[in-house]
Length: 98
Image 1 (cartoon, rainbow, N blue to C red):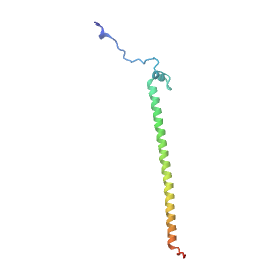
Image 2 (tube, rainbow, N blue to C red):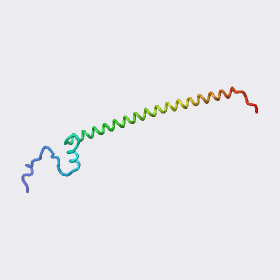
Image 3 (cartoon, rainbow, N blue to C red):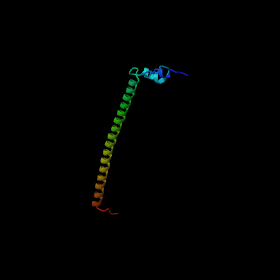
Image 4 (cartoon, helix red, strand yellow):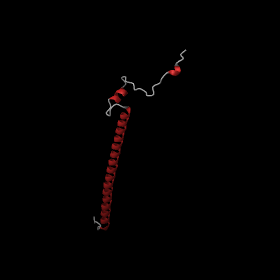
């Protein structure tokens, strides 16, 4: 029986393992230094910049589609207007004799 179980001391700060773990090595060699907080901050910045790039590309795509739609609408309306003018001309053209 062990009587001193209640007297075991527990460290208040957890220690970071310094083994060959790839996560630990990635954190140690990360772009911002060595803390996990800096590593996570860098990941968050990267995520936000990617999110911004996706948003900008989607805005560009929406604007491009809108411009192309307007161009095609104008082309189609011009085509129908010109075909209506041709039909009017046919109505008022003299009949052809065969």
